[in-house]
Length: 343
Image (cartoon, rainbow, N blue to C red; front, side):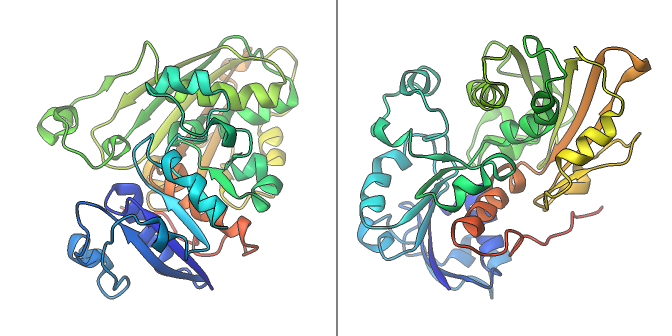
């Protein structure tokens, strides 16, 4: 058994972590922190956890968290970096679900997140937690930067083609849509039901914080910078991301379907669907699964990839648990054998 702490247990990713970890056979939930809810029973705020999580929220004290084997940060950007150095020095391993350690260049990070990085020396050590790319490095990591939800969906869609060297990488297009939970558990007019319901809109067209993270990952695979147009949209639903990705072939490919199936043949949480399939977000709701389909419309030189995930699971908490399993030598699938919720 390992002792687990969660900093920021009141948000959507925090409660999703609790839902997954409460039934994990190798986990003892030791500390769940929230300054605003300290002293209140976790199950009082989230009644779905009654009978599964019987501790109260506590202050995010380093002394308490230092007794844990691993600490998850499910906090706003800029919080984890202030506490991580002390935890690492105490021998605690850390998985950050925010963006504090995803981007390797501190200048680039500051540009997109509007603040100076407080521990830039840890950016080179942090392992980017996309298991399908960095599995072996994650196993030995002290600090894992859990990927963003959009970057997970987009990278898993493009990577087989980039790794095969068959597409032009100067004009990639990612047309992506997310449910409202992607904005987090906070009161904002734009995500109120009366504002977002019965409507559909783009946002962040001029530049979204996930853009440099996606470009960084794709550039590492390609070995050179890539060109990417990334346009996110808000859907009037709670969970789910649907990414429609476009790329131009520069080399003939006999069988795109076979290329994708071979790329993910051994991946427990990537499902390449049969040719002609149209993956739906509802098929992965509550599951740590990315479902993909690939098309070459009219046999032309454009490839279209469809990628769906649950933004709170494979896009956040589920992937974080997957990383924890790798870090501690557990079966990668442990605690994550959830089937998508239908209807």
